[in-house]
Image 1 (tube, rainbow, N blue to C red):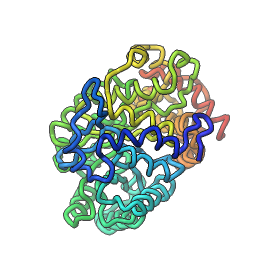
Image 2 (cartoon, rainbow, N blue to C red; image 1 turned 90 degrees about the horizontal axis):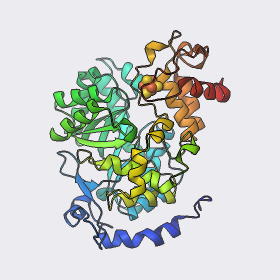
Image 3 (cartoon, rainbow, N blue to C red; image 1 turned 180 degrees about the vertical axis):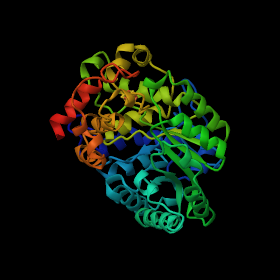
Image 4 (cartoon, helix red, strand yellow; image 1 turned 90 degrees about the vertical axis):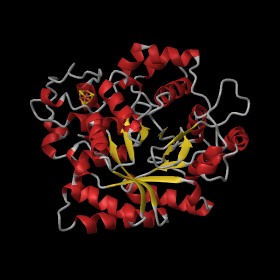
Length: 408
Ligand code: SF4
């Protein structure tokens, strides 16, 4: 399949990038073996070696660029990512209603590379956690794990995350934690973790306190540079041996809401500046950009060779207009109190991101349908009380109006 915008298809991608992976000596090797052969890239390094980092205390070393598979339309992109040196693939039980895990499992099985890759997946979305009781928790979690194992065609999951945790109490909930530990002891899971988009610093701090988790998948990007609590929590987690994985590194995707704001920067500058900003934090083991075509894979994998900023990348990161125009909702929930009608503003902002930036209208519709009616679009009367309530310059009323045009 050729990307109409870039003209880059699988064959052209491989021709342009495969030689780099071969030179790096990573193809066909287990992550551990490959890492031993690949020291961090140095300036002007002619051999262009991928930069590897340790994944917490797991003993794994993986490239600093991994793959978020969530929105991938074509398993050929996963194959090309592996051939380019990527060794860690992130999916979830509820992405594409299970078909995302299936796609990863099928291609990994077909290529015969199960022992050479790390598969991260996620179970127990909030609604499933709420339905757990002392009586059903063990059986229910076991069923969810077995279903994921079946879909990824494996007898183990490398990293199993509890999906989308915002309440620190969930971290120590014995109904969850004890059963994850049982799965790990039984060998069905190699590492256990938490994924978090909201209240991240409190969630991560609690994980450190509990001391049982191996990995955390957290939202972080350059629009959150002022979130010192999050940066401190990430540092604490890394020091405690928790593998930190970054998501939302592009602040909501390549299609920024205000294209005018980026007229001075080409697409590669945007991608590379954003990803380098995240991965220059050595407390973060790897990141999972969600590239969905060969051009984006090509742009993203370049970062794994060299984290030095080009002048225009540095300029973009210092450009306050860019940060303001991004309108990235960091899900901090501070705006909630401003709404007299109790609209679930952060979730509505996330739905807007799915529709306007990911162009995933199906996921947007589904997430909207999951919201209680009295907290969704119907609750909003367009009173504009929330205008200027967001510390991250999100124009909340404008985005809600967009959603009303699309879905109300
Ligand atoms: S809209 Fe702004 S205040 Fe509300 S959750 Fe998002 S970032 Fe926080």
